[in-house]
Image (tube, rainbow, N blue to C red; front, side, top):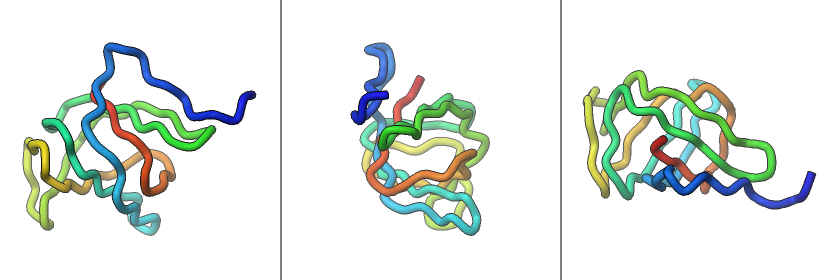
Length: 92
């Protein structure tokens, strides 16, 4: 397997980057560069092994539950796998 990052298909749109990961509660903080809402499918890609898709079940801004967020917001959401800061988030 080549030692390079996985590239997303063209129909996926980069909407943010992981800025923090709380491993004890499996929550990621994403700084958004695009809109995101509950129910959206996202793909998280990073390193050589992390590449998974999940549905946004819920998200928070400053510990308040929200249904949608816009570019410039930092949102917290539960993720299904371990991740690291700097990983990219795409809307699928």
